[in-house]
Image (tube, rainbow, N blue to C red; front, side, top):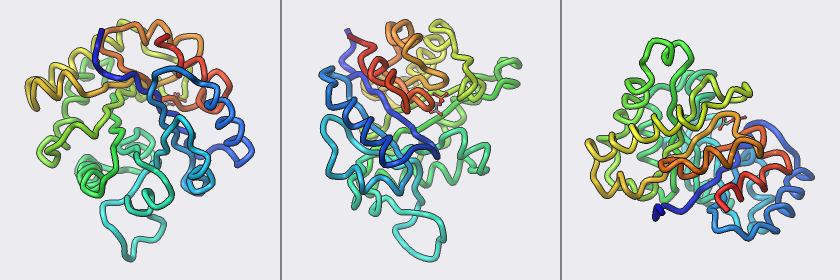
Length: 245
Ligand code: PGA
């Protein structure tokens, strides 16, 4: 049995409303599993949830690498903390591929968020053409490598492996495909960071996780939880939170 606490993140992306958040809070209030649950609503709802946090923590979906200033549209780690978020998602494939964020910027943001006291859900993953050309490991190792020299303490990082072709498409990686890359990522942590980081860092799977497929994925040795998009807006999120029970 792994010592890594099972972790489930709900990434609402640009969806939801206060009313839907109330439903989620009520749903999660019934959760008695040991799973660490982190919910990432759009920024504007964080403060609304601040005083409703029970058995879950809050995350921002992004933040910038400066504490303040003339950066229209951005928010800082301190602002996230101010409205009750202890976590931030960085490197998400939509930030990389819709908004063009590059490894360097993402690495600076990860380093700054950690310095400011946030924990980070750091996302990596390959596109379909990269998988078809056997580049999955190369791409993922490169994305991890980009933060390697800027991060000293890995204890506040959770890695989310999210193949781009599986996000929001209904095409989940098979448990075997996911386990294979999770194992390789853990070996990368061993070879490039430390034995300790390899043993302790949670590696989540993300990409069309549902109430129906979560148990089989959760049973794999190196899958320590999930980052969930679409299904985190639905009642089945409770099943995903409980997938290890
Ligand atoms: P999905 O999104 O569960 O809707 O595929 C996952 C994510 O983007 O984190």
